[in-house]
Length: 113
Image (cartoon, rainbow, N blue to C red):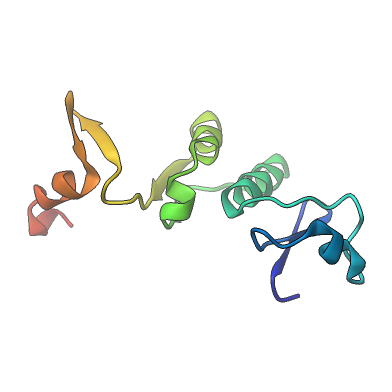
């Protein structure tokens, strides 16, 4: 199902700006289906999987997922380690020093990567 995903018993269009009316007109998409962002879907799918008792040591993702505070909050609440990418211009606070993520990363010696 190109352009769709399955989560929590609902098929959801995965294309911003795509009219929901067009989505539900397609066979197999329930009328109650609503648009959700990739991070929102990831949070729902992660919570559902963890609720089944699945053991997870850690999660990683690109900056789309790293930018979502709800997904990070879910992982922290469930005590799941995570390593999401974040945009280089995102501000981070390390040891009470506020600067861009790119500047912080540039200060890390190559041997630590």
